[in-house]
Length: 299
Image 1 (cartoon, one colour):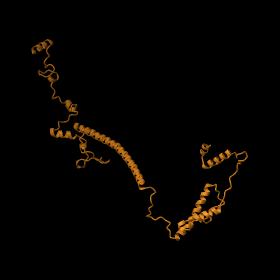
Image 2 (image 1 turned 180 degrees about the horizontal axis):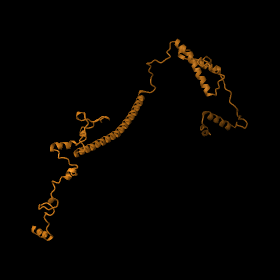
Image 3 (image 1 turned 180 degrees about the vertical axis):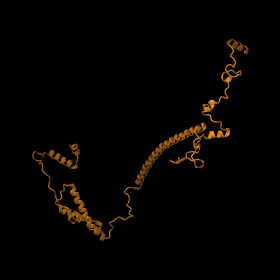
Image 4 (image 1 turned 90 degrees about the vertical axis):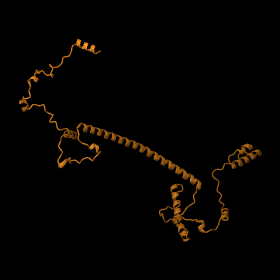
């Protein structure tokens, strides 16, 4: 029985169980003795005892030390549409909290003039420094953690920028190489054209030049436009070796050449000459037998 009594949850239930156990052992428990009470017991309000306790710990201090303000909602001049406290529904949380808020406003409006009369500052000065709630060691750890996190973010950003710069650098390098290859190819074509005499321009040796404006013609000496003619290579050879005459169309017949027969030779025209030239004057090829003998002799 003792073990059962000690396994109770609360102290009150343990005492009640012990009393019941003792009464049961004595035989005083009989049917009809236990009466179930319905409803809450009436609260006991000992006013004299409360006043006595209040007088024991009450201290008569100045108002500046206590800063207690008792105000009613009617004294609140900020909000004139405040309902009476009897009309405030205590079950309505919003209205109840608003009544607390307006009462706090009224208390502040009542206590601020008293603080000003007592020359108590009510505003925080500009150079006010409050003591930290956490220790310096804890704040140092937090500062180091924030610093390490910021450094990690900066390192990640720098890595991203470097990757972007590498990609951009590769792209620019590829474009530059392609541009150089294109310039090299165009220069080789220009050199080949110049060597073959198809062009007399040497501008590709001077590098890139700004293009001529539209409508502006290239002028030569004397302000006259240059005419189309032989290129520089042809002119140089003509100056060095002389001009050999017109070649194009030189074999065309004209009226004068058709009537001129002074250079005609019948013997040459009909192969009647005894000269070495011509088909009949050519040496005949030896026969097969003779060629074989000549071959054997050479051995």
